[in-house]
Image (cartoon, rainbow, N blue to C red):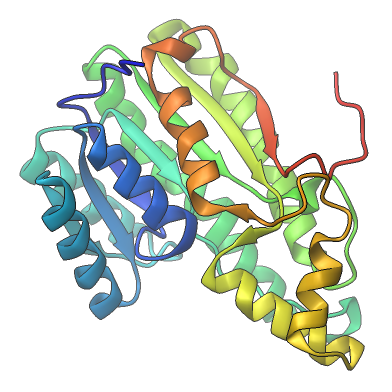
Length: 264
């Protein structure tokens, strides 16, 4: 399927690892030039070099902290200056703590909200004027399945992920008429570095092995395995392409059938 993404320009936050890395690689493989950001400079530069070598596309590593508005302004300005504009934004950055409710401090809650919710707000606010100038664009929010189900170790995740889903709908309503389509993806239990940390936390919390924690994590997933980062990246490719030109304001789960709710 020709997605007609050749020559587009994307920003992927949290782009050095996990879903962000998979998204950046998939976009570059489709001919997109990509700016990736994260706080860890070494991982960021290594990922950019690897994707650049594999795809031959421009991959721009820009260190940025989602809690710092000036960093986000610099990220977008550098992307526009170095790559020529912004057509696609994948809001993926996150920094949360897996812990029971009573163990989460105000700082834990506020940090997660600042990175996930306000980081997505800041990035969207900065790119929208550039997308308006180009006659349209695509924004994808990544927010996990904790938005749809409770989990004793994912208290702040439920709050932040619900928020970014709501934000996607609000942005869609305001900017779809200008060709800017906004959607949210709820990844289910996805194999990433962050998921590895979560499994270790679950193992410790339940006094079980990490292997057993993973077995339990996938026990109720009908496809019988964890979702892979590439599964998320494949949906991102479709949603940012013209093939999805009538899809906006939606939250789509990629969870291997694990969700029990019926959403209409």
